[in-house]
Amino acid sequence: MSLWDLREKAAICGVGHSPYGRRLNRSAIDLAGEAIRQAAADAGLRRDDLDGLIVSFGTPIGADADTLAYVLGLKLRCYLQTWAHGRFTASCIQWAAMAVNAGLARYVACMAAVSFSGLRKPMMGGAGDTEGAREGGGGHGEDPVFGMTSPGAGAALVARKYFARYGATSRQLAAVAVAFRKHAALNPAAIMREPISVEDHQNSRFVCEPLHLLDYCLINDGAACVIVTTAERARDLRKPPVYISGMQGLPAGREEFIWTYPGFGISQQAEYDYEPGLQPVYQMAGVTPAEIDALFTYDAFSILVWTALERFGFCRPGEAAAFTQEGRIELGGALPMNTNGGLLSEAHIMGWNHQVEIVRQLRGECGARQIANAQIIQWANAYGDSLIYRRG
Amino acid sequence: MTTYTKPLPAISSLNRPYWEALKRHELKLQRCTECGKVWYPPAPFCPACWSDAVTWQRLSGRGRVNSWVVFHQAYFPSFQDDLPYNVAEVELEEGPRLLTNLVGVDLAEIRIGMPVEVVFEDVTPEITLAKFRPVEQHSR
Ligand SMILES: [Zn+2]
Image (spheres, each protein chain N blue to C red):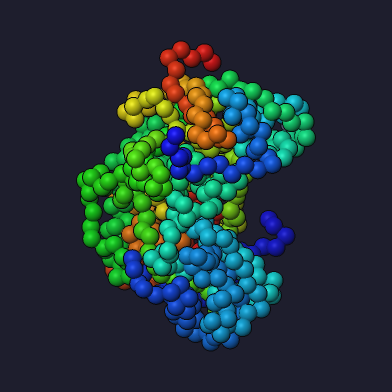
C-alpha cells in the first residue's frame, strides 16, 4: 500500500470530442476548443471551473497548453504538457488525479488535439521526423541512416519476431483489424466504418513488412478531452462519476521497447520468458484481470493488441494470437476490446478517444455498441502503463 | 562520384569513437572493465554498473539476425530507388544489437537467427556504415 492511496479518489466527470476526419480543414486549436467545451458541458461545468490543463500532444501536430489557455480564455492555476507521443495518455490522467487530490487544481482538462492534415512536412517517418534522428535512437527504434523510420517500423520488427518466436501469422493478426472495424461500424463518430475481411487485410499492401496497411492506424484530425476531478466533487456533478480505481505508470529503460513487454528481445532487451505476475494496477484497484469487463489499448498497430494482452496477463506470451480469434475481443465476446473502433478504425486521437469511449461505456451511453452492465474497464498498453476505471 | 543523399549520422562527443573506428573499418563498442558489459548506444559510463572504467573494444563483427523488416514505402526520397529494402536488427556475439541493412542476400532468404558478419560501406569521405552480410561458416 502506498503512503498516498488514490484508489477511487479521482474521477472523470466530463468527456467531449470534436468530429474526427481525414481532412477537416480545421486548426488544432479550433478542434481542441470544441472538445474542451463539450467536456465541460457534459460535466455541467463553466469555463472558470476549469483551473488545470494537461495536454499530451503539442505543436506542430497539436495545440500547446499555454496557447490553448490564452486563445480559449481559460484561467489556469496549473498546466503541463508531454511531448508529441500517444504513449502519455494514462500519464496525463494520473498526474491530473494527483493534482486534484493535492489541491493544485479543482478540475483538470486532459486532452490532445491533432491536425495531421495541416502539417506541411509529414512527421511520422522521413525527413520531418527529427526525433527519429536524435542521439541514442528514435522513440520507436528509428535509425534514419539505414532507412529505419516511422513508428510502424518498430512495430514491424516486433511482429516479425513474434511470428517467428511463437509460430503466429499475419492472417491471425487480421482478426484484430477486422474486430475493431466491426466496432467502428456501430460508432457514428468513427472515420472507417466499411466492414473488412481477413482477405481484405491480407490483400492490403505492405507498408513495412510484415505489417500490411490494415495493420496501421489512421492518420487524421480531431480532438478529445476528459475532465478529472476529485471523486467527492464528481459525485455532485451532472453525470455519474467514473472512478479511477487503479493506476500504473509508464516504464522506461534498457529492458523496455515501446511496442512490447520486457523479455521479448527487441532493441537492447534481454530475451527470456516474461511472467507478468499481478501487475500493480490490479493491486491498486483491488481487482484481477478476470474481473475486467472490457479492455482498451493503444492500437496504433494491430500487433500492439497482442503484446498488451500478454503484458498484463490476459494471455501467456505467444497465446494472444489464438486468443484474439473467434470474436473473443469483439462485442459479445469474452473480453471486448476498443469498442469505439480504436486508432485502427475510429480515429487516432492518441487514445484520448478511447478514454471518452470507456467513460461512455461505464455510463451506459454507447447505444448499439453498449457492453451490457459494464462495471470495470481497463486501459492497458504494450508499453506497460494502465488505468482501471469503475462505474460510479 | 555520385553524391550520397541518404541521412547521415549525427556525430556527438559520445559516439565519435564509434564512427572513427568504422572509418578505419573496425567495429568498436564500449566495454566496462569492471563488469564486462558491452553496450550500444554509446554512454557516458557503464549503463550496467555505472562504472567509469570504460574502454573502446574491437568486436568480432559477427552476429545473428534478431529481427528484420522490409520497407515498401519511401519515407525518404533517397531510399526510393532501393524499394523494397530491408532493415535488420543484428545481435552481435558480444551482446548488443545494432540496426543495419543486410547486403548480399535476397529478401526471400533472410531468416531470424541467420549468421551474419560486418561489411564496411564508405558512403562519404568521413562516414562509413556497418552493414552485414550472411556467412556460411559461423562459430559461436
Ligand atoms: Zn559495468
